[in-house]
Image 1 (cartoon, rainbow, N blue to C red):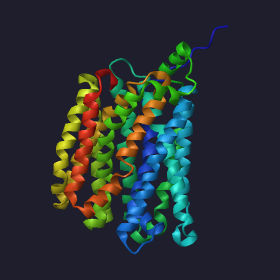
Image 2 (tube, rainbow, N blue to C red):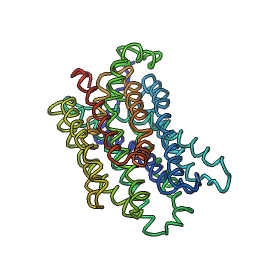
Image 3 (spheres, rainbow, N blue to C red):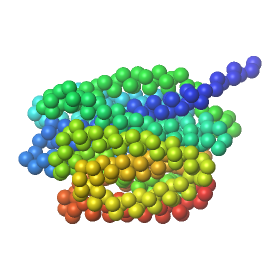
Image 4 (cartoon, helix red, strand yellow):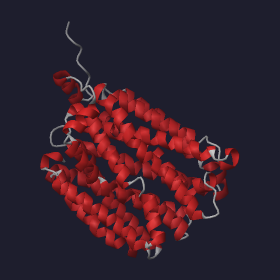
Length: 422
């Protein structure tokens, strides 16, 4: 009896499914980042010192980044053993349900210290789910890519980040146009979290209609499944994991300085109204979106390694402009947001495909996810907190030095990688 041939995913279905999943995941993730600046310091961390409340809020923000490698290891295990499709569905549900529950939580005044504890638990769930989502979405795209188009296909999941950022900032911006700031803090902030259930439904519908990736099916048929993917990863691919982690360091530091830190700086330090601060973030999301396809195309044409080296050099140079731009007028802050997020798009476009490249198919889900999420710990988990502390303690130039040092570390790791490693 002959086996029934497996239906092939169309390019449109592959790319839309990889994009919509990461869009939902990053929308949920960034809604929290925005609320961590605008709402959570008041509702969950009441303090006589606004800066202390903000730092406590950013501390819960960082929890997700420590949860992400755990999610990467768990979902990566099943993604490499069971398949990409089922694992992506489970990751989406984990992330989405955690987000919806946040929107239903009572505040500190209602249940006291239990409120921030529940918030932290849900934030852990967000990070756990996203830890398994991103790597699977990258593989869904790249493992179905035709020859010479791997970076281009791998760019589509990356587009979910700026689209999610745009949607999360945009929904708060719209709310503030129709309700007062007091109403936003009282109940309006819950709307983005609870409404994400609609996006989850759309994402599940797209994901459940897919078949398994071609490369995974071929690898499983020829080599079988790895018993413990994370064991093989640390036994045989430690170098690729280490270099991949720090090759993405500057990507994370730049992003969270250009989003969460910038939003808090604009509102808390410069006194820019919420609406205007969100508009600046929306401007940045457009620059982010525009430059992702550019570098993905360049990466397929000239090589991912070369494109990432030159982009990281530009990030290092840009770090010297951070203090003058943020210390200037509102117009110069807008310029900073546009340049920072344009550079973010340039590094983010090829980084997903680059991190996946050195790992064999049998451990690729685990390896890609762990490299990306370890980078999240060292590069992003404390970035808003560290930047806020440096700015308050030493001044804006030290925030720039922080970004510059991160870029130099990333540059060293990219240079140390062989061509086939990234």
